[in-house]
Length: 116
Image (cartoon, rainbow, N blue to C red):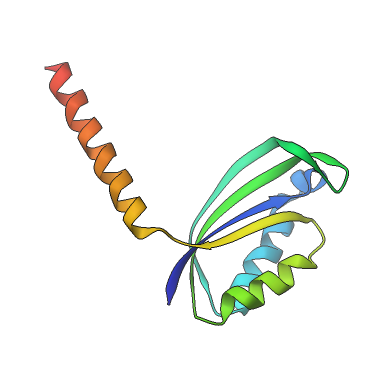
């Protein structure tokens, strides 16, 4: 199983009942044989350009573990799912994550030294 990142833009009218919209996305992932390791709701944000006559969307980010055939299945279903304005499913950049965590650790060490 490989690691992927999924960012979904949910229709702003569904913000009131976001759990059902996210439940659909979760079901799509689990039906394709994947697991969700992390989920982060970024909230309602303004879009850079209109999508389906909408100026805003609710952004939700997920870390996934998927088998080889799952990304295509998930993409095909998300393309026709009502309530999903856009999505981005990409393979996780493990080297980038490691470099980011290393940079955060170094910044934390510098903060500790400056407090003393």
